[in-house]
Image 1 (cartoon, helix red, strand yellow):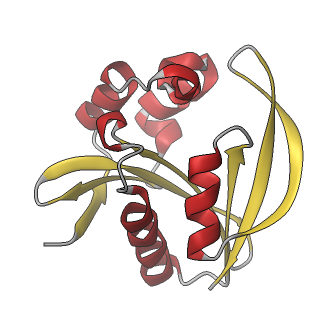
Image 2 (cartoon, one colour):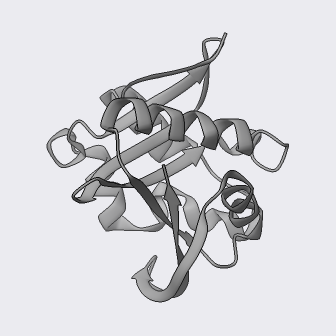
Length: 154
């Protein structure tokens, strides 16, 4: 069985926000680490219909967010269940998200932004075919962090 994408339900959003906690420096990605992101993720109206819960063989795997940022360009955000990270699951998960985005939205380009310290994610994105566009500083989690913007051409 493959990956299954369904609209993110309130119960799933709360599970992710309050119970998914990452180890060490990756705790940066905990939903509760940034109050604005937390509110946006938990409020159904702000979340809209662009967030999807991902399962594989009926197991929760992660989530994806898809936002149209320009004509024919989708920006993605994603999170994998913490106990699955760092164990070789990322490539298949990210590829499934790209396949879903291509079939649902038919974009010409897909972008994402990743904290530059997250080298394991950057490695996966590069392997799949994302290219570095630029880096920028972003206010989040109570401080400023460097992010890399990456681009995938469909």
